[in-house]
Image 1 (cartoon, rainbow, N blue to C red):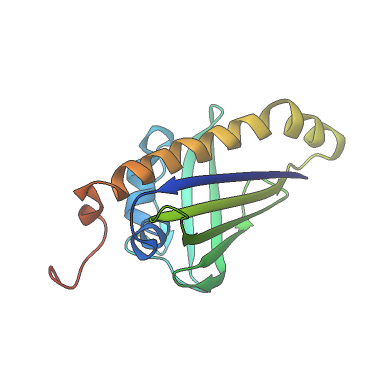
Image 2 (image 1 turned 180 degrees about the horizontal axis):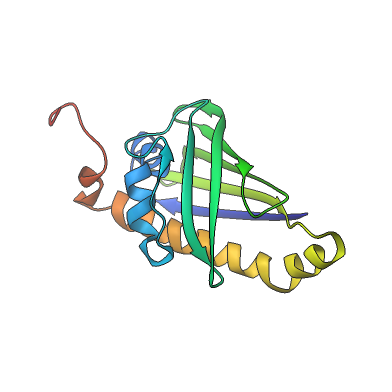
Length: 163
């Protein structure tokens, strides 16, 4: 099993960062390079507790499907998605949000996963998947930071003023 820990300071309110992180529309746009588009379950808007989403995507040159369910949810502090179907033997992703020491938000990711195929899977985890998944999250988090710190967040989140 591989565990990846990431943390990023985002100069935006916790609620905004939390909601962007669970926005299906933001996820699709921020990871367009992998062709991720929600096709089942929650396919747009903000995903919540108990809901699922299915993403077909291209990773490492292979087209695959991942279905994840939100298995824990405490807005705006924490949510967890757990793979219910996909290429991994097991995968769980914790998303935590807290006020930053200099204002804004500290967003923390803990991604845990295990590859299938026993010993061969463990070799792939260490040789390839750890680096690939770390970079995947870093790219997504950098885009989330760019959007949350600009006015572009309004493209993905409905505010009371615009509702």
